[in-house]
Length: 87
Length: 357
Ligand code: SF4
Image: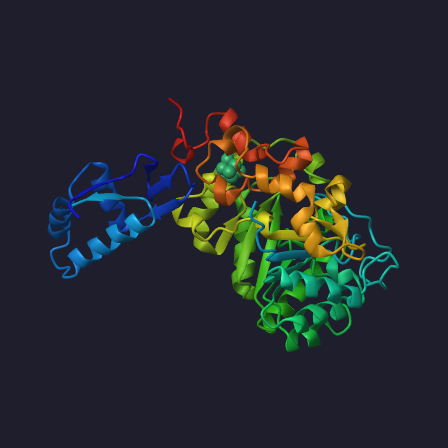
């Protein structure tokens, strides 16, 4: 899972307390807060999966499970139709 | 078209009420003696007949039943109705909305045997005079407070519903303290709606800006313990997850004469009564009613105005479709608060599917 991006029908909106992923076609909505919000913002800025991991490692040096957590979250977004991936 | 499960029934055993509240959206006839239950009227369904509709509703997917009204506890046979529902199916969650001024015989005993999911009690002020004036009934406050305390003592999940016309924060803060001190589980603030008697009250118009800042300040000062019933477009993100949604696509309302409508709207709009469970098969109404078919087709797919351009439309469903219908005879019209917010340029851009250019 290298290149990741939102599909054309998904928009990411930011508000003071968090972010919203919204699928324009299905009306599905996902609210993201905390680290998840940050990851969504990195995706919006077109960072690759490895670049996001690098950023998270810098931000949370003591977190040992960070790679697993990131991949789980990205997987969750893919399954919900909020994310596209390319190897 | 897929027919969804019928998960919710709003049951209105009585069309009248013992109070005459200034804001009531149904504006029912007032019963004769303020603090006395009355016998079932000939025109009202009996507990046996009620049992029949439960059989059919459970087949269609019923999980939640709410007694509301009119004042449901006005009927002296309420306990029988409640028992009928609670013994019908152990999985059924039963809630009650009441003004808390009446205690039909055997109520506490049946609650002891079959505790309700929750009881929502209407209380508009911590001051007796203010509440009684709003409810047009001296002595109402004292009874409602005693009823609430009894519920809490019996460890029944209790919510206070407070109506707000003035959108002043201080009275709500006082009510929040009352709730905390009494042990009430939650406090919900209902802005008075421009429907029924509330229409006249709101003629002294409050701007949508005032309502939004009222909600913002309460959220800030009271945290999650106070719920202000406004559309999700005006809620911060951390509130949306916990907000309740009208289950209009999975809901029917039962009127005292057995009439079947979408909810209590059948009291105000007789054209929205789709049948009568005393004569009609509930399943036929649920699958064949032209009105239900229209609702399923139009809501939210054909929403007009800002509701049609709102990212919340699939869950919010126009906040209250029946209120929207009441003001425009159209299921697709826009909820008044959001319409006014859009007209005054304060509807949040981040909540629009297509933000303004
Ligand atoms: S615009 Fe309509 S769908 Fe959106 S929050 Fe308001 S009432 Fe709900």
